Amino acid sequence: MWWLLIPIAYLVGTFPSAMWVARANGVDIRQVGSGNPGASNVTRVLGWKRGIWVFVLDAAKGAVAAGAGLLIDGRVAGYVLGAAAIVGHVFPIWTRFRGGKGVATGAGVFIVISPLVILALAVIWLAVSRLTKKASLASIIGIVLLPVGVGVVRQEWWEVFATIGLCLLVMARHLGNIRRLIGRREHALT
Image (cartoon, rainbow, N blue to C red; front, top):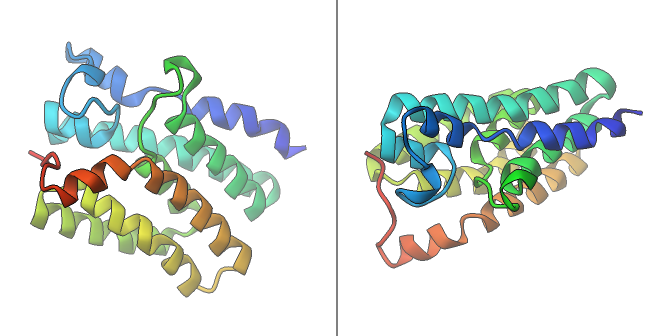
Protein backbone atom coordinates (compact mmCIF):
# COMPACT_ATOMS: atom_id res chain seq x y z
CA MET A 1 0.00 0.00 0.00
CA TRP A 2 3.03 2.32 0.20
CA TRP A 3 2.61 3.07 -3.52
CA LEU A 4 -0.41 5.19 -2.57
CA LEU A 5 2.15 7.67 -1.23
CA ILE A 6 3.69 8.29 -4.68
CA PRO A 7 1.43 11.31 -5.43
CA ILE A 8 2.16 12.72 -1.97
CA ALA A 9 5.93 12.32 -2.51
CA TYR A 10 5.54 14.07 -5.87
CA LEU A 11 3.67 16.95 -4.20
CA VAL A 12 6.36 17.20 -1.51
CA GLY A 13 8.88 17.53 -4.34
CA THR A 14 6.94 20.43 -5.86
CA PHE A 15 7.49 22.69 -2.83
CA PRO A 16 9.12 25.78 -4.44
CA SER A 17 11.98 26.39 -2.00
CA ALA A 18 14.01 28.67 -4.28
CA MET A 19 11.01 30.74 -5.29
CA TRP A 20 9.93 31.23 -1.68
CA VAL A 21 13.39 32.15 -0.39
CA ALA A 22 13.95 34.54 -3.30
CA ARG A 23 10.48 36.06 -3.04
CA ALA A 24 11.07 36.67 0.69
CA ASN A 25 14.01 38.79 -0.47
CA GLY A 26 12.02 40.67 -3.11
CA VAL A 27 13.29 38.67 -6.10
CA ASP A 28 11.53 36.52 -8.71
CA ILE A 29 14.28 33.93 -9.15
CA ARG A 30 12.88 32.85 -12.53
CA GLN A 31 13.59 36.35 -13.91
CA VAL A 32 17.21 36.76 -12.79
CA GLY A 33 20.51 34.94 -13.20
CA SER A 34 20.06 31.69 -15.09
CA GLY A 35 16.31 31.78 -14.42
CA ASN A 36 16.50 28.34 -12.81
CA PRO A 37 14.62 27.97 -9.51
CA GLY A 38 17.42 26.19 -7.68
CA ALA A 39 20.07 26.63 -5.04
CA SER A 40 22.87 27.58 -7.45
CA ASN A 41 20.91 30.42 -9.01
CA VAL A 42 19.80 31.67 -5.60
CA THR A 43 23.45 31.59 -4.51
CA ARG A 44 24.51 33.60 -7.56
CA VAL A 45 21.75 36.18 -7.09
CA LEU A 46 21.29 36.37 -3.31
CA GLY A 47 24.48 34.90 -1.82
CA TRP A 48 25.64 31.73 -0.11
CA LYS A 49 23.45 31.94 3.00
CA ARG A 50 20.22 31.96 1.04
CA GLY A 51 21.58 29.41 -1.42
CA ILE A 52 22.35 27.04 1.43
CA TRP A 53 18.80 27.48 2.75
CA VAL A 54 17.40 26.50 -0.63
CA PHE A 55 19.74 23.52 -0.86
CA VAL A 56 18.73 22.29 2.60
CA LEU A 57 15.01 22.72 1.89
CA ASP A 58 15.28 20.98 -1.49
CA ALA A 59 17.37 18.14 -0.03
CA ALA A 60 14.82 17.75 2.77
CA LYS A 61 12.10 17.06 0.19
CA GLY A 62 14.04 14.10 -1.16
CA ALA A 63 15.15 12.87 2.26
CA VAL A 64 11.61 12.93 3.68
CA ALA A 65 10.18 11.04 0.70
CA ALA A 66 12.95 8.41 0.56
CA GLY A 67 13.03 8.10 4.35
CA ALA A 68 9.29 7.50 4.50
CA GLY A 69 9.66 4.77 1.88
CA LEU A 70 12.50 3.10 3.74
CA LEU A 71 10.58 3.14 7.01
CA ILE A 72 7.34 1.90 5.52
CA ASP A 73 8.54 -0.85 3.20
CA GLY A 74 12.29 -0.87 2.62
CA ARG A 75 14.66 0.13 -0.15
CA VAL A 76 12.37 -0.27 -3.16
CA ALA A 77 9.81 2.06 -1.59
CA GLY A 78 12.62 4.47 -0.63
CA TYR A 79 13.82 4.65 -4.23
CA VAL A 80 10.33 5.01 -5.70
CA LEU A 81 9.14 7.70 -3.28
CA GLY A 82 12.49 9.49 -3.57
CA ALA A 83 12.18 9.40 -7.36
CA ALA A 84 8.67 10.84 -7.10
CA ALA A 85 10.03 13.76 -5.06
CA ILE A 86 12.76 14.39 -7.66
CA VAL A 87 10.19 14.33 -10.46
CA GLY A 88 8.04 16.74 -8.45
CA HIS A 89 10.98 19.10 -8.06
CA VAL A 90 11.96 18.93 -11.73
CA PHE A 91 8.41 18.97 -13.15
CA PRO A 92 6.18 20.77 -10.59
CA ILE A 93 2.55 21.00 -11.60
CA TRP A 94 2.25 24.48 -10.04
CA THR A 95 4.73 26.12 -12.44
CA ARG A 96 3.74 24.48 -15.72
CA PHE A 97 6.20 21.65 -15.10
CA ARG A 98 9.24 23.96 -15.13
CA GLY A 99 11.23 23.36 -11.98
CA GLY A 100 14.76 22.93 -10.76
CA LYS A 101 17.40 20.50 -11.92
CA GLY A 102 17.06 17.93 -9.14
CA VAL A 103 20.59 17.92 -7.71
CA ALA A 104 19.71 18.98 -4.16
CA THR A 105 16.53 16.89 -4.02
CA GLY A 106 18.48 13.91 -5.38
CA ALA A 107 21.19 14.49 -2.78
CA GLY A 108 18.48 14.36 -0.13
CA VAL A 109 17.21 11.04 -1.48
CA PHE A 110 20.67 9.50 -1.45
CA ILE A 111 21.72 10.91 1.93
CA VAL A 112 19.04 8.54 3.23
CA ILE A 113 19.64 5.64 0.81
CA SER A 114 23.46 5.74 0.50
CA PRO A 115 24.82 8.25 3.02
CA LEU A 116 28.52 7.37 2.66
CA VAL A 117 28.36 7.83 -1.11
CA ILE A 118 26.68 11.23 -0.82
CA LEU A 119 29.11 12.40 1.85
CA ALA A 120 32.06 11.50 -0.42
CA LEU A 121 30.37 13.22 -3.38
CA ALA A 122 29.68 16.31 -1.27
CA VAL A 123 33.42 16.68 -0.66
CA ILE A 124 34.08 16.31 -4.40
CA TRP A 125 31.27 18.79 -5.25
CA LEU A 126 32.68 21.37 -2.83
CA ALA A 127 36.22 20.97 -4.17
CA VAL A 128 35.20 21.21 -7.84
CA SER A 129 32.82 24.13 -7.30
CA ARG A 130 35.44 26.07 -5.32
CA LEU A 131 38.21 25.43 -7.83
CA THR A 132 36.15 26.15 -10.96
CA LYS A 133 33.39 28.43 -9.60
CA LYS A 134 31.00 26.27 -11.66
CA ALA A 135 28.25 24.57 -9.66
CA SER A 136 27.01 22.86 -12.81
CA LEU A 137 30.39 21.19 -13.47
CA ALA A 138 30.53 19.98 -9.86
CA SER A 139 26.96 18.68 -10.16
CA ILE A 140 27.64 16.89 -13.47
CA ILE A 141 30.69 15.17 -11.98
CA GLY A 142 28.59 14.13 -8.97
CA ILE A 143 25.82 12.81 -11.23
CA VAL A 144 28.31 10.66 -13.15
CA LEU A 145 29.98 9.35 -10.00
CA LEU A 146 26.80 8.56 -8.01
CA PRO A 147 25.97 5.23 -9.72
CA VAL A 148 29.65 4.25 -9.48
CA GLY A 149 29.59 4.97 -5.75
CA VAL A 150 26.37 3.02 -5.27
CA GLY A 151 27.97 0.08 -7.10
CA VAL A 152 31.16 0.30 -5.04
CA VAL A 153 29.32 0.08 -1.73
CA ARG A 154 27.94 -3.22 -3.03
CA GLN A 155 24.29 -2.34 -3.27
CA GLU A 156 22.12 -4.77 -5.23
CA TRP A 157 22.32 -4.52 -9.02
CA TRP A 158 18.80 -3.06 -9.31
CA GLU A 159 19.89 -0.17 -7.09
CA VAL A 160 22.71 0.70 -9.46
CA PHE A 161 20.27 0.69 -12.41
CA ALA A 162 17.68 2.70 -10.45
CA THR A 163 20.40 5.21 -9.59
CA ILE A 164 21.46 5.43 -13.24
CA GLY A 165 17.84 6.15 -14.20
CA LEU A 166 17.54 8.97 -11.68
CA CYS A 167 20.93 10.35 -12.73
CA LEU A 168 19.87 10.36 -16.40
CA LEU A 169 16.84 12.50 -15.49
CA VAL A 170 18.99 14.99 -13.58
CA MET A 171 21.69 14.94 -16.28
CA ALA A 172 19.07 15.69 -18.96
CA ARG A 173 18.21 18.86 -17.01
CA HIS A 174 21.89 19.87 -17.33
CA LEU A 175 22.19 19.69 -21.14
CA GLY A 176 22.09 23.49 -21.40
CA ASN A 177 24.82 23.72 -18.76
CA ILE A 178 26.94 21.23 -20.68
CA ARG A 179 26.59 23.31 -23.87
CA ARG A 180 27.53 26.49 -21.97
CA LEU A 181 30.50 24.75 -20.31
CA ILE A 182 31.79 23.62 -23.70
CA GLY A 183 31.28 27.13 -25.09
CA ARG A 184 32.87 28.67 -21.96
CA ARG A 185 29.71 30.69 -21.30
CA GLU A 186 28.54 28.95 -18.13
CA HIS A 187 27.45 31.09 -15.20
CA ALA A 188 29.89 31.24 -12.28
CA LEU A 189 29.06 31.02 -8.61
CA THR A 190 29.67 34.17 -6.58
